[in-house]
Length: 262
Ligand code: PEP
Image (cartoon, rainbow, N blue to C red):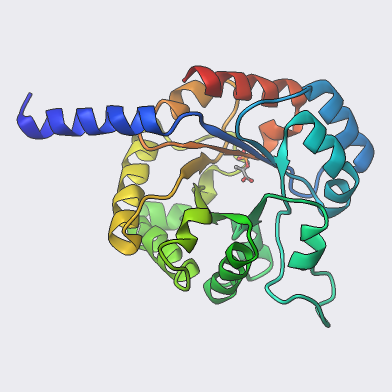
């Protein structure tokens, strides 16, 4: 083993130790009525550590007190950068503030794809969210085509740079990144451990170059109770953003327990 490898192994062990506990976040997307959400929380029970849920707005508003009682942190799946006005179907920061949310989700690939969410809009959203005192979890991810044709590295770095371009060093301290390869979302097939390890390492290096600091980096894309231990054990993985498996309280609870053992 040469000196370079040894340095890398020591660095990764230190990084691994420092990033505990892992963050476990669930994105409910357009699922979970208020009644279903209430049943979910009853079955989930109380939690400790960094456990986050992003319910749809109606369920978020109705169940915010219950999530607080259970120790679950929560926030919306999307928000507008303006405080109010003629933006039919949108939701503003003052509305979110009333619910005592702690973290806002931004830039999920489904919003980028189905609602044409642009990097320009996202840079305004991330700045608005952070300056309003919230943590912002920004999702980035490459398409299958970009993964195959080798343009994935450029794409991911570009998304981070553009979407966070207006934030100062200090403001970046309120940002988390969720790396979610688009081809692994909702497919039941996560990225391989090699791909996750390589990508997370690249992103952490890019963060140091772009921002002069590292930001917490979650992996998302078909995480479940079977692969959570292995994915969570990859260096530079600071937690998970979970879609499908976050809808089942038993599975979500199991992933929370696994995240404590990694
Ligand atoms: C997601 O939508 O953010 C996600 C990761 O979904 P899934 O876990 O179902 O792949």
